[in-house]
Image 1: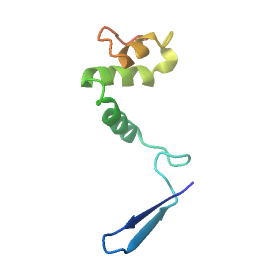
Image 2: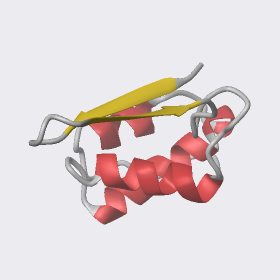
Image 3: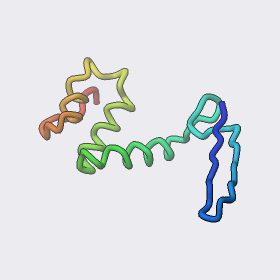
Image 4: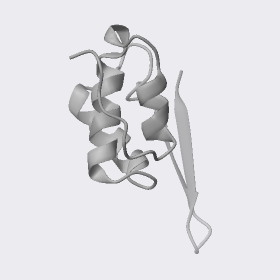
Length: 86
């Protein structure tokens, strides 16, 4: 997969750039640091820093959770949700 971005300037000139290797796509996965930066950027619009961190912790250990109750509680904004599976 690739992406092409074309920009048209006020003077009418156009500039295009094709990117063949998309970051975060198949064969070019994001690093953990990049994933966390993206997650925090998105989640902090709705969750405070503590809730965002608890949610990230749960998702990273999803296979250890008995169910998704705690994860969904945080996503709904319930402040009493505590990580499980530790």
